[in-house]
Length: 75
Image (tube, rainbow, N blue to C red; front, side):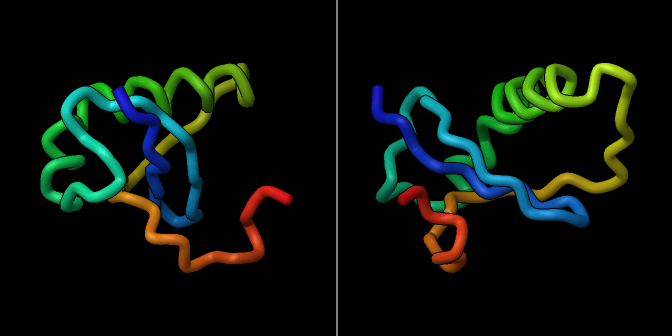
């Protein structure tokens, strides 16, 4: 299984590396979006760890990160 980078975009953009069964970096966003339950579950787990006092998400969109934000690249 290949690890891919997902970009999540409610009001703020989040990026996370995640292994998704049957999806690789050449996949279409549609293919990634078919895994919404698993992706959201991992995103929620990470948010709960970062904000144990709680959070609210009003909208949730995501797709493969295509690298538009060079300033967020790891050095």
